[in-house]
Structure formats: structure tokens, C-alpha cells
Image (cartoon, rainbow, N blue to C red; front, top):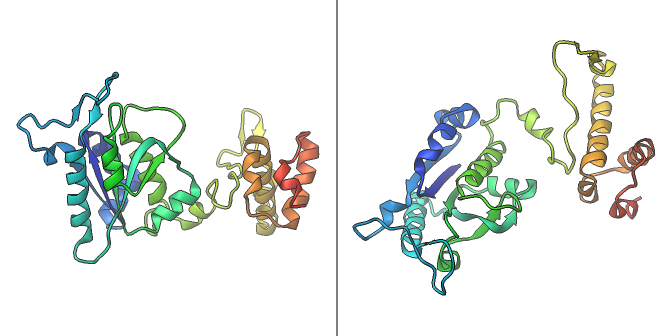
Length: 260
């Protein structure tokens, strides 16, 4: 995958892009990431990227012209003569909430352009002319789109073959099938009086998988019951959830009761 980032603070990305999985994925060629400074696409001698909003009010708004020019230049570069127009994403608190389905959809793209807004936002004409979709990482406001862009890259890259060493770990990630992950344990066998569940030491893979599925259902019911309405569940899962609901003294989500 080819990811290009358009930002006024390219220096923020250097540590992120050279560390851990992302750094190794770039070295191996599984992931190609480039960062461009918006100021490279300005035309005035001051390299201005923002101005006061029409209609008054506090704050500054990012100018449309350098952002539009930058996106178009990056899109043309990503094409590489292969007729693959990149999907342009604006990181914005007004966007659709980033979730597992969105991550997997974006991971299927060959190329992405990530546009990082700043200040009070970007001129609406940028959205109207060159942006395909807006994405938010949560219902709160940050100073800019750089951190959300890193979150998106981290999430999307895990879906790309060759980025995560053990693909099985991706298959068991939280939200992969609409459920939270099961608990994990490693050495030593006891920590401050808390041991490892016996089933994980049994070597019985069928029992271990059954335990993990049950604990995944338990975690989801206890922490994020809203996810259960859309999760991939079979008849056995529904029976397990009914038992867990009695054990935890928690009601099943209304939508789940309709599937029983």
C-alpha cells in the first residue's frame, strides 16, 4: 500500500514512521509512506497556509488553494501510470467514526492520501473538490489531524500482509469479528497471587479455543455490550451469552434478544 500524508508539520511523523512495525514494514516494502509539507504548494512569498474566516469569528481556517494543489499533486504521483486514483481522506472531527469495518475497507485500497487539517478546520471547498471522505477517531477535538492520521495508518497497516509477523494475532484482534479480545497471559505463572487459568496450561487446543471464545464473549458483554448486536454469533454463542448474563447479572442487549 502507498500512503501519502499532507500536513503543515511533517516533522511529527518521523519517529512514528521509523519505529516498530511501521518502520519494519517500510523497510521491507510492504508499506510505502511519504509525508509532504502543505507549504510546498503555496504560491505567495510568505508560504501562507491559513487566513481569517469569512463572516468573522475566532481562529484561522486553512486555505483551499494549497491543499487542493497538494492533494492533486500527490494523487498524480500515486497513480504512477497504473490508473489507480488514491482515496483522499480528511482527518476531521466531523467525519465518520473510525471502526474495524472502515479500517478493513481502507486497507483494501491500493493508495491513500491523508489530509491533516489544523486550526479551526479547512476551507469547505477542499472537501467539495478533492476529498472522498472524512474520518474521525472520536468525538473530541484535537489541535490537528496528525495524530488521527497516525492512528489510521497503524490500524490499516495491521491488515496488510507482511506487516504483522504472525497473521494469527491479527485474526484474534479485538473487533475482528465484532467482539473484544480474550484475556492474555505470559510468564511467570503467578503474579501477586494471581495465577494463569489451568486450561491454558493443559495443551488441549480445543478446550483452549472454547475458553477463549467464552472469555471474548464475557469481555464484550461486560465492557461493550453494544457490539453484540452486530457481532458474528452462532447458536452456541447465544447460549453462552445467556449463561454469562445470568452469571454477571447483566441483561442481554435488546437487539441480541431478538436473535435468540
